[in-house]
Length: 401
Image 1 (cartoon, rainbow, N blue to C red):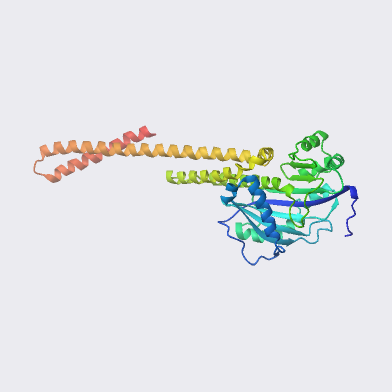
Image 2: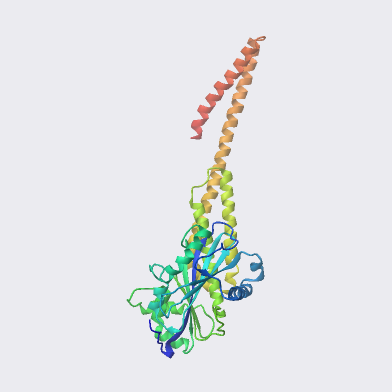
């Protein structure tokens, strides 16, 4: 394929961050060796990347959040992606973001050479359904590692791509004026060739979360876009600093969703039969909700609008409501079964004490009739207690119904 020719005014430097939500089989302590198809990251690339993320996480989330070690970032390595075209990314740097609750994210960085803005081309790259596309080739390698740590060959939760577009030779406003409809189509990952309505395009472009001049940050249900007309740093292989707050927010949103999805799945299984098991289940869910609250509490400090809209767009609010409804069902089951146990206990205590009382009365009568025959007295006592107990069981059992 000949090298891509781009007009100077339309040249864009694209990069992509692919986020895949998964659940680990158990506590994660590192990747197994060897890793077929995965090469080590060159030099200090992994250390520089994690250090840059940690610097911003501490600045945005706070030192206490990091010291709690809810989240740990693990570098996996570099995966080759050959044969997709001269303009396509030819390698992917993969990291695992694990959360102490057992959920995790695959975070995959892809850099592409400068090229003309082409929404259709990039939508095709990010299509998770394409049989021989970029995602499929990535998971031919990543799937084996994923199976080792999760037991499954594919992601089980959400897939969300983040697109970082840098404009070196044109102003952002001019670029958006020329490419607004295609920019929104890219945000929706819309493969249809029919144009979007102008009011839809205007509405999505107006929901810009970036507060800086020369920048635009967009979020939809299927992807996010961070667009800038200039970049303060261009260190090779490192993500731009201006994109990190948005990336960190999306990471926390996906972790929220994954934690809540796990809790919902846990509550949706058959409820335990004993009160003790129900109480244990409720405690597990409460502990899980604490991790959920820990994931979101600090995120809202620096990105209220993105977090609020992201929870709505990604369905976090809906699944949270569903978890709370299930938790109320567990609480109701605990109360109901406890009351039932107390009722049964009272029932049997009534039987025991009622039968014993009648037995004592029978003993008094039998002792007066059979002064020297102990066996007869015992027979009267036991017989009267059994008959009266059986009668009480039959009488009170109907009342319990």
